[in-house]
Each structure stands twice: as C-alpha cells, then as structure tokens.
Amino acid sequence: MSEHQQLQRRLGTFDATTIGLGSMLGAGVFVVFAPAAALAGNLLLVSVIIAGAVAYCNAVASAALAAKYPTSGGTYVYGREQLGQWPGFLAGWGFVTGKTASCAAMALTFGSYVAGSYAVPVAVAAVVALTVVNLLGITRTALLTRILLCVVLATLVFVAVAALVGPHPSSGDTAAPGGSAGVLPAAGLLFFAFAGYARIATLGEEVKDPARSIPRAILGALASAFAIYLALALLLLNHLPGGQLAATKTPLLEAVLQSQFAAGAPAVQAGAAAACLGALLALITGVGRTTLAMARERDLPRPLARIGGKHTVPYVAELAVAAVVILLLLTTDVMTVVGFSSFGVLLYYAVANASAFTLDVHPGYAPKWLNAVGFLGCLLLAFTLPAASVLTMTAVLALGVAGRWLVLRFRR
Image (cartoon, rainbow, N blue to C red; front, side):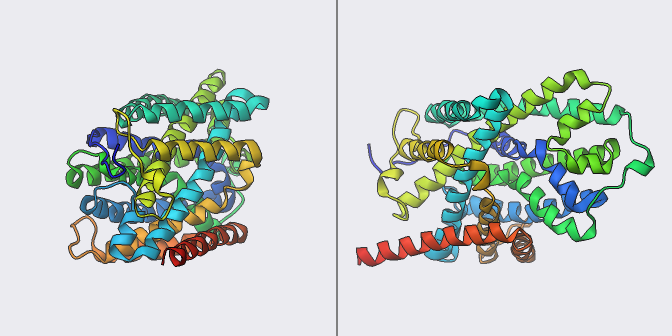
C-alpha cells in the first residue's frame, strides 16, 4: 500500500456538520457552565457571547482556508502553506499534544459517569471500541456520531424543559459570585466548548465538494451550538440560585434535580455519557488526521502517514493515538495534565487567523479585518488563562521545537 495514498471523499455537508456539532456538544456542555458562572456570575451571558464571537472569527478563517486546502491536517497545513513550516509545526504540535490529553480526559469522564470506581478500565475499553469504529471508515464514524448526537440533543431538550418549568428561585437568591473581572476568563473556558468545528477542517480530505460543503458545515455547526449554549445559559441563570450554579460540578444534572422532573436524572447522566463518547470519537478522528498530515511532511515519524484497508483510513496514526491515550489513562492522573490544552488550542486558532489574513482572495463571509480580530481575540483569551496552564503548554511547545530543530540538523 502506498504511503502517499489519499483518503476518500465520503462525507456530505450533513455528515460533516454532524461531526462538528457532535464535537462541540461534548461532555463540556454538561460541566462548563458552573466554573464559568463562578467567574462571571450574572454576566455569564456576556461571556457566552464573547466566546461565540471569537469562535465565529476562527470558524470563518478555518472555513476559508479549508476551502482552499481541502486536505487532512487543518491549521497545521494552512500554517505551513501560508506562513511557513515553523508556524504550521507549532499549530500541529499544540493540537496533537493538547487534544491527545483531552482524549484521555474525555474517556475518563465517560468512565466516571458509567462505572464509578472502575472508571479507568471502562475508559480504556471506550478508547479501544471507538478506535475500531474509526478503523471501519469515516462513514461509520459519522453514523455513530449522528446517533450519539441525537441522544445528547434529546437530553438537552429535557434539561431545558425542566429548567423552564421550574420552580424558580426568588430574586434575592439569584446573585452569583464573580462579576465583570471574570467575564474574559469565563469566556476562555466557554470558548473550548465551541472548538469542535476544527474537526471538520481536519477532515477536509474526506469531504465531498469541499469548497462548498466545508464552509457550510463549519458555520452551520457553530450557529447551532451557539444557539444551544445561549439558551442553556439563560435557562440555568433563571432556574438555579446563583451560588448553587457556581458551586455544582454538574449544572445540567442539578437543574433537573431542582425541578419537577427529578426522576429523570438518570437520563441526564446517560446523555452526558453519550456526549463524552461523541466528543471522544471526534477527537480521536481529528488528532489522527493531524498526525497523518504531520507525518506526511516528516514532522512526525513517516510510518504514521500510512493509509490502508478497504476503508482507506490512516490506520497507523489512529492506532498510535489510541496507544498514547491508553498509556496516559494507565500511568497518569489525566485530569491534572489537560489544563495546558486550552492554551494549545488558542494558539492553534491564532495561527489559523494569521494564515487566513494572508490569503490573496477573501470570501465575503471572512473579510481580512475579521481575521485580525480573531487573532487578537485568541491571544487575549489565551493570556487570561491560569499561569500554570500557559507555562506548561509553553514547555511542551518548546520541547517539540527543540526536537524538530535537532531532527532537521541531523538530516542535513
């Protein structure tokens, strides 16, 4: 089998949109509103809007670039083509390392929801099962994502109805901790609930009619997620006392428990488990495709670029990602090593906006000034993150840069 074989274009606009929305409506939607409310308080809606605005800038930049470069790899490819090898490498390395840790955290979250003290073996089993699905081809990945997304959407509708029906707290109970100083950090947290549309761009080599389908899928998935997050934030603020919303680790489950539909709490737990699986499936797929692209350019070991099987999948990259995720699950406290991924993702999108800014032709939905706003927005949110996250990811990036520099010198 040729190492340079191309992936097959099997995804239509609907399937690509489903994968993007399934990535965004992951486990984060079931937990992110609580820490965001603790930071922003009653200004939570402002944080959602800011996060959505920065995500929109990134989405249109990614859409414009993916239409021009419809191949696997996403911003790693765009950065190399538009800015040079080093910016592309930084974006790809930040994405692969950060999102691999996120895969492990997502798997562990799933295991915790469904198995309690047996969370780690169940998480490992989930990674193995979803990797098998990916190896069966991208259409199988899209089908399972569609099923899981239906479960998650049904769960979110149930939570919305419970929050809408009430009962609601009195006006004196609605005050929440946090305030205006916490709006930007809260937006930084909420931003990562929007970041799943990158998965559509990383699958660019497998989308039919990419110049037309990818922009539609990215913008459609983002618009749907933004409407859902805004509605949920509004309903939660109206339904739960401010202090209670900020303190709980499971805000959507808490909303149901504090309603007339408390008996439906297991359904919310099942929805959260499905969201974890959907996001994990899309994450493994996206990291595998970026790994494939980096291996093609020899920024990662060349065997990772091999494609094979009747479903034409990057099987070596998929298996390598699964192996690293399982290793993290078995040897580390996963939840303590993923904080740096936030900084890595914002750097990834900063490179995407800078790459889009240099395009010769800008589509109407992605003017040049919007790319500049997106670039500055990414940097602003990145440097409002906790210092430990910034320093840890900086160290990981420095390690990757040093490794690549040594390899290049050795090749010369």
